[in-house]
Image 1 (cartoon, protein in one colour):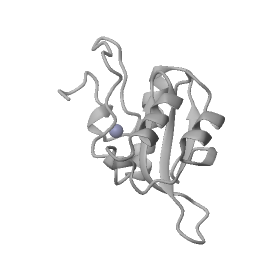
Image 2 (tube, protein in one colour):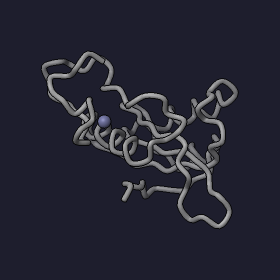
Image 3 (cartoon, helix red, strand yellow):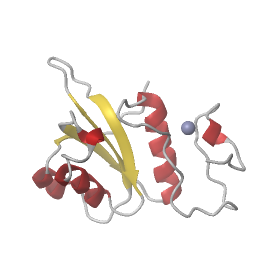
Image 4 (tube, rainbow, N blue to C red):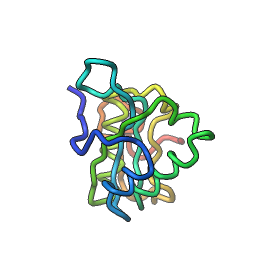
Length: 136
Ligand SMILES: [Zn+2]
C-alpha cells in the first residue's frame, strides 16, 4: 500500500495554500488530480521543503507557466515533519510508492548535507539506500 498523505486534498491555488499551509514548516507534499468517480488522487508529483513548505508550494502555483512539472495538478496533500532527515526519508518513500510521472529524478539529499552524517533512502534496494553514498 502506498503511504498516502493525510492532510488534504486541498485545491492547488495560492489562496488555499496560504490558508491551509503553516509558514516555515518542514514537510512533504503530493500533487495531482482526481479522475471522475475516484476517491484517491492520481499523484503526478511529490516533493518536500527543508525550510518552508508554504513558499515551496506557492512558487509552483505562481510560476505554473514555467513549471512544466506542475501541469495537470489541481489538488495537493501535505504532511509536516520535524527534522530534515525525516523530511528526506518521507519524500523518498512517497517517490518509491507513487513513482510520480512528473518527477524525473530520485529525491536529492538535502543541500550541503555532510558526507560524514549518515542519511539514506529507506527503501531497500534503492541505490540511495547505500552508505557511504555513491557519487550522485
Ligand atoms: Zn530511494
